[in-house]
Each structure stands twice: as C-alpha cells, then as structure tokens.
Length: 216
Image (cartoon, rainbow, N blue to C red; front, side, top):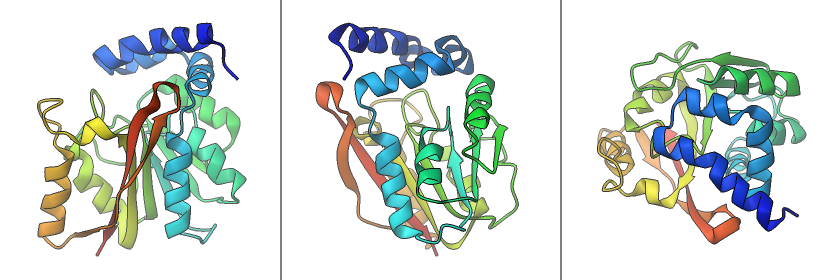
C-alpha cells in the first residue's frame, strides 16, 4: 500500500501532463515513475477497460488494439488473460519501449494519436479497440473516432475508459465526446451499449466512465 508521501508525489509528477498533455511531458515523467505513480494512486482504468473488452470479445485469439497503450498496463492484463493478438500504439517513445520490454503486445508502435493521424493498420483489422485514460483533457478527442472506426471490423467493439468529467463538453474547447458518439449512432455506424461508472483512481475517489460502442 502506498504511503501518503508517495501519493502526494504521484499527483505532483502528474501535474505537467494535466497542464500540457504532450509527449514531452510524458517523457519527462518517465516510464518507471509512471508505473509507480499509477500503482500509488490505485489506477483502476486499465482493469475496467480490460474487463469490459474481454467480456465482449471472449476469443483469446481476437485482434485487439490498445489505443494509447502507454507502458502496457492494459496489455499486461490482457496477456494474463491469455490474449495473444494484442497490438499497441502510443505517441511516447519511452512508454512504447517499456511496453515492448514487458512483451505484452504482438506489436507496439510509436504513433501520434492526434485526430489527423492515420492508424497504421488496414481497414477492419481489429475485433476490438480499447483505450484507457487517453480520450479527454489534453488527450485524444472525438476527432479520432473515424480512424478507430476504420480499423474495426463490422461487429467490433470500441471501449473507452476515461474520467467521468471528460464526458462533459464544457471542460475543454474541442472536446465533446457525447456529440462524437451521437453522430456515429445517428448515422447508423455504431450502436451505443450501456455505460459503466467506476473509480478512475481509488485515491481521492476520482469518478470514471467506461463507454462502449459496437460497429454495425
């Protein structure tokens, strides 16, 4: 169990990312510190995202993309459950290197996740895309949805675990996840499944939300 001092330091280490959300901020944070700090804060998001995606896609040979894979926290959980066709993409080179060292992905690539970036896989390549702690303030926005949809096969699932506040369009100009989902649903591209609330961090009881869509 983390000490109060470790928890305080974890929040402090995270501040530059909250402020800037850049690759440079994550690089400065460092893969070692990131893993340690997330453990100190009781970061539940990888667990919640993986529980949801594996309940929807029980076939352990299914191809799954961890979009914004970081140091491979979700990948570790998927590997422990026997999933062997998991791929990861993340913009921070040091984090991709760490996830590669953990050997939790079939392939991990450095890839910017800004809206205009093309995901480096063919149309309909994945059975599911899971993204934990990526969509939100200073992170990916609904502008990335078209690319996620492109690499999903029909019937595939898109699972996003995020802070609940990131589902509030008043938090950040340009971030409107509700409208992004609504547009795809109204156009008949996605079916929205039931949302699930959880604790994003155990520390300070930060609320989180798992949002799921199925490609028609």
